[in-house]
Length: 206
Ligand code: SF4
Image 1 (cartoon, rainbow, N blue to C red):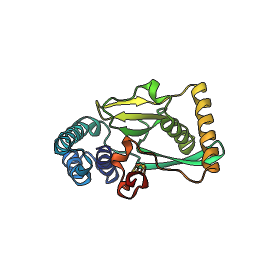
Image 2 (image 1 turned 60 degrees about the horizontal axis):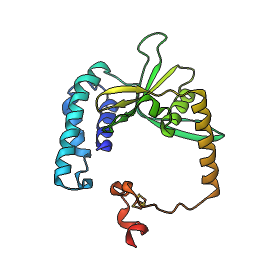
Image 3 (image 1 turned 180 degrees about the vertical axis):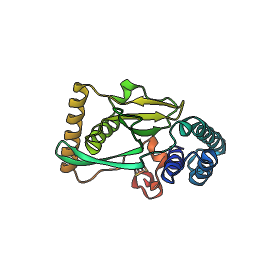
């Protein structure tokens, strides 16, 4: 469901003039992008599709009305971390609301239980977004947040110096591992349910 929600919202802002028929455009995109066949059964498919449509209707009424234009949608933020070139993707980027205000960089989140600020401050992906947004958009001041579609609120990402040091350590050790290892064996897990190459995956053929 997240891909269909994110894709619909990104398309709405990319095409410009998002306030015009926002709900109708979002729902049309959702129907096009929705992959019901990935659901466990028809009951789940129906439930999630209804949930997705409801989320987008609320988004059109509340969020789009407040933010009628974006600086960018689906923006790649590039920079360097621990000596390695990296990229993070921001779903929506908004211009400062006024003088002295920050550029707002958002990632959309559709988890049933939205993450809290404490959780985000420890999340690797959120930390990388925070650091790269600061580098890419410098000298602008930047505010980074996850916009949680359920229940429709922005949770800001911020990190203490300790959390920042830990993130640098994790990134460095992962980069070292990636350089050391060249083969990554598939690991069976819940994520396989959404995998597009499952029919060709060796671990499911055994
Ligand atoms: S099915 Fe996909 S996600 Fe699961 S182990 Fe295979 S390649 Fe990885």
